Amino acid sequence: MANQVESFNPRVDYYPPSLRAKYAIQATESPEAQLPTAEIGWVPDMAAFQRRTAKRMSVLGPDAATLPKGWPKAMEHPLVWTGSDLCKEDYIFNLDIADISEIKEALSRLKGLDVEVQDIKRSTFPLPKLGPRLESLTTKVYDGIGFCVWTHDELVELPPPETLQGSRTPLTSSFSVAHITDVKFDGFPDDRRRPAFTNLAQPFHTDLLCGILAMYFIDRAAIGGDVLLASSWKVYNELASTRPDLIKVLGKDDWVHDTFGRNPPYHQRALLHYWQEEPVLIYSRRNLTGSASTPRNPNIPPLSEAQAEALDAVHFTAAANCVSHTPEAGDMVFINNFAILHSRSTFQDTSEAKRYILRLWLNNPDAGWDVPPGLKLAWDRIFADMDEVQHHWDIDPYDALDGPLCEGVGHTDDLDQRRGRGLLILLVLLLLVLLVLLLVLLILLVLLLLPLLHVDSLDNLVMLPRGMVLVGSRIGCLSRPQAATQHVTIDAEDPISSL
Image (tube, rainbow, N blue to C red; front, side, top):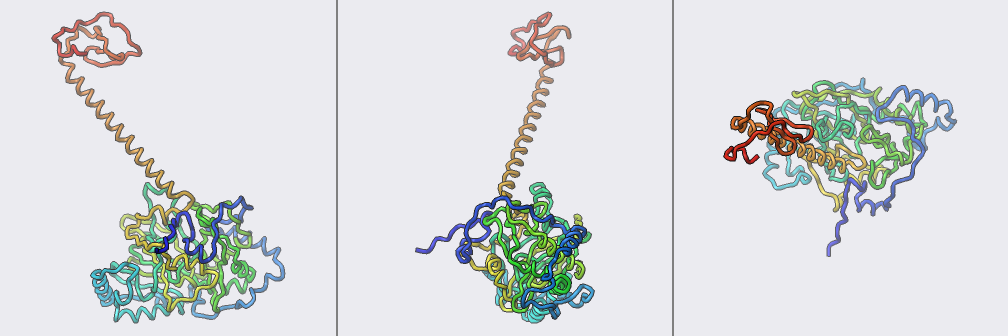
């Protein structure tokens, strides 16, 4: 009998069962309260960084001037660049009409085949003329400056470009296709949306985890929303020459990454890895500091002052050496996630222009870099083939609102509660409308019946049930039942004698 596949809920467990078994990961309970963490937020603060640096510099020992054993003092490679070194011709490449026609032809052919999205290959999406050109860009991304931008004037319903991809990420705690846009609607208040799904500026970071970060811009913002890119190798060289102690801090495997309410509640690994003569800087600031919508778990081990300084040092060094690209609708940006940090500027949308990105996490096993040992577990969580993990491709960005948009303790329950409250409010409103309609009908009925009444004068009252009184041609309510001074005799043949 076939082995039964153990169930896996990515909103509860951070690792699938097969990975827990492979890496001997034990289930853990919520940790006890920890010491206060360093005061550092998701939004970098230059003044706070400078104060922390001044304080720490005054107490550094003599070993702070040395790098970890075997690590280089400086890297020499095309990946070492600053923004002023680059011009647009270095990284922007145009797809012409012939290229678009070839892509459309391949797409039309693909639609006639019975294949799943994850099974798209070069044989099912052939690009005989464009393909060789795209392979040259693959070299630029992996062995050149680390990124490229494809531009064209016509939006096309494009599947993931095959030349920069060998495999796609399945569903674990993330989604194969992520729709990155400023999501504003009643179901998700601003304080529960992850920063990526707002219009806020983003600090420098890498994605967790992929070899190539691919972004297809369906539309651009009306104002702002620039893509900012920085070489992590340039950041390495700057810190290695000025603050080698921070290289040591970044290279230690004691960085606590929050899993935001899942099991285990946190995991630890280094941010900077030196592997096969390549420095690899991989981190997301939100998983280390938390954010306003996803605050850091106070019961996990804290960030140290040295870690807080190192984190800000990476950001501000990257910001000082970055290149800025203003995306246009139809742009495709491919980034070597192992070598390039990225961020974005704040932006504003309008009804005519709404920043909208389709994001893919890609891996090319032939051309991609080898994964450092310290990242193997994180890599397998995304790209390993696991029976308990199913592929999930969201065409509609709102199909998975309780997944990528709102990550935190009990967020799925919160969504259900909001939906329940919405239904309750709707039912109450419907009930109120019905009551108003009944009241209107009652008033209309009384107005129709009043001409049939025979009342001698306004001073004559007829006692009605429950304190209601007929006062001439008006209906009124007494504070308590009381006898009329002169009763009106209602003839037995009167149509309203049933009152």
